Image 1 (cartoon, helix red, strand yellow):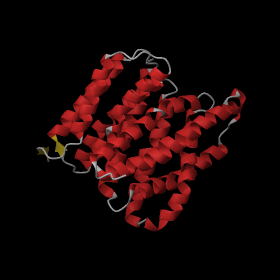
Image 2 (cartoon, rainbow, N blue to C red):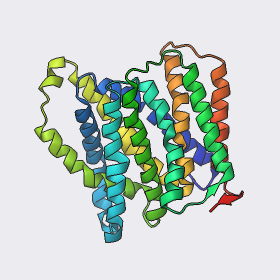
Image 3 (tube, rainbow, N blue to C red):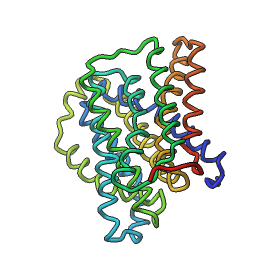
Image 4 (cartoon, rainbow, N blue to C red):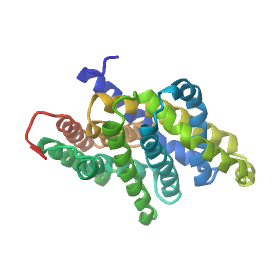
Length: 295
C-alpha cells in the first residue's frame, strides 16, 4: 500500500468511512445495556489494551517535546469525543449523529488556519462547502431519521471541534512520528484512567438488563475496529495527505449509513445518488493543492 499514490489515499479514505460509518450503530447497541460513560470508558480501555504492545514497542520514540501533543490527541482527539458521542446518542438518533459528524472538515480548516498557521486554498473552501451541501441534502432526504432531543446535538458539534484540533496537532506538530506510534502512545496516556473509572463503576444495571454480553461484544467491535485499526489508518493517512482531506472522511460516512440502511430494508431514493456525487466532488476539491491560497 503506497499512500503517496492518490488511488491508495482514496481506498483508505473509503475504508475508514465504512468502519466509522458503522460506529454509531455499535454505540447505540452498547447503550442498550451500559451507561454512556461506561460505553466510552470500555471503548477507550479495550483500545488501550489492543495498543499496549505497540505502545511498549514504540516507547523509545517518545520525546519530551512530543508529550503535550500526544496528550492533546489522546484527551481531546479520542477521550472527549468518545464521551460526547455516547452522551449525545442517549437522546438523538445514531443516523443524525453520523450526519453531524460531517462538520469535522470545516472545523479542521478553521482550527488549522487560526491556530496552526495553515494555508487555505480557495478550492478547498469550495470543496468543504460542496461536502456540507451534499451532507445536508442527504439529511433532508433521510426517510427514517428521528431528531429526538436536538439540544444533545451540541455534544457532537463540540466533538467535531475536538477532532479538528487533534487532526491539526498530528499534521503540524508530530512530523517525525509515524501514525502507528502516535495512535498507540496517545492511548497509552488515557487508557489507564478509563480502566480506573471502570474499576469503580457499578455494572449491576448492565447485568440486570440480561443483554450485557451482546452489548459488550458490540463495544469490543467498536473499540477494535473504530478506535484501534481506524485511528492508526487515519493518522497514517493525514501524514501523506492533508488534515482537511483526512477529515473529509466524515463526509462519506452518511453514504455508508445509507448503504447499511438498504441492507436493513430501508428505501434508497434515486436523488441520494446526486448528493453522494456532490460529496465526492467536494472531497476531490478539498484535496487539490496547487491553486491560489489565503495566507
